[in-house]
Image 1: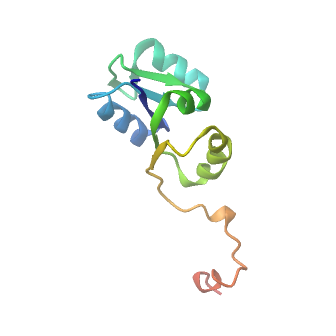
Image 2: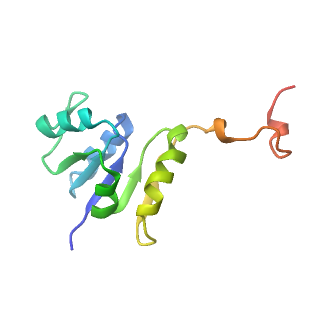
Length: 122
């Protein structure tokens, strides 16, 4: 059965990758913003770029998990933990995940841990 490729993240990097992938496959593009998705699906235009009709927007992670075996996660590192808590239970070992995370999530690091003390200035 033919499956779509999922792209999670509708920032500049996510839409660039979705646009490139659309040359060879159908793409399901995820954003948390239903308003952004509705606008995208109505005109296939985002940030001045016109997308092919084989790129569809969704605000449902269930859509991504149910319809895609290859999923690109292209979001800021600060959002990765909460995304994976929601998406993780929907995934199975057959899914291929490729991430393009940038930055570090320093909010979840305990700087009092002995392994991290050498990274802080005193």
